[in-house]
Image (cartoon, rainbow, N blue to C red; front, side, top):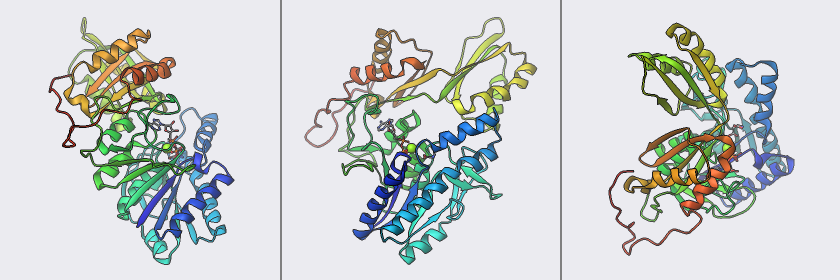
Length: 422
Ligand code: ADP
Ligand code: ASP
Ligand code: MG
């Protein structure tokens, strides 16, 4: 088999842990498999580099930012290649550029467009284990780009797809995907299997165990992904196609995202074309907008609120300032202390009362809801970030997620559900 193994920041957090990773890779080799390794920067390193940049500049140039934050992964590829060589495994480190990871030009949040992987194929043919820097690529001009926070997962899955690997193992500091973040809710339950679709929703709503784009790649190219711990040999969670054995719970997971900020435009003229101007401006700057709320207009004026990643919030506000002046907007407000708490589940498609239950349980804890958005398989609420943990625990409890779900009907099919709206 050809296996791509990805090790996250905690797994390569110090020299001993890097040696431990080398032992795992050596063992997989000894079992007769070909291995391509992808690593992140040592834990805390990317944050440290971003912090340094902000000591120099409030709005650092994005190209320089990528030049800076791509260095963390260069350290770990070299150290791991050395550790592998020490344990008698032929290994060679590669940057994103060296393995031909070509991306678009969106610095700090680039998308992979193509992977040539020539050097990887060469190394594999020679029996050498390639150790690839996650999170980075190059654009058309050969400038270094990075793939967004948590992007090493995407490097791993994209390489697995490009090389048609049999499996992509994501080794991290938890031993699988849980009903919610096990570091917040100790009785969260590990899922044996989760569908691409559900994982995509959980990831995009903040379950940072896998970067959203890695799940998109896995789904598109049907790469089986396993999430496992690098510190024990537990089974882990398989992310794969939806099947009959999978749980069809109404609510299967709770997620939270503290990395969003809310921008509010007060006193916006209520006329056609205004929203298109605002969001067109943000789109040109590659700012990803999540929730949008527009109030009912009064006296020809309205208010618009939307959420963006915290890292882009100041830039977004800055970019809108000129437009806001031209349009006669009264004020732009930025609120950073918010969190988005969501419940996810494919079974939600066919059940009613789920949203009401979510809102009433948050209300019972005195948690005010600032924004709401729903889709077929999720409901999200924006709240004050100081209530995040309380909200996650409450929802995990109310929807009884620590309980093992009941067995399916005899034919292995999930019980038929009434088709009613949320
Ligand atoms: P790595 O550095 O290995 O990429 P991350 O910190 O990016 O690791 O992702 C692992 C973390 O994801 C866990 O430590 C856990 O706190 C968090 N997490 C959030 N939601 C979940 C979930 N539903 N299941 C498992 N882990 C989760
Ligand atoms: N080092 C990068 C980050 O911290 C990429 C990753 O860890 O996946 O976001
Ligand atoms: Mg990660």
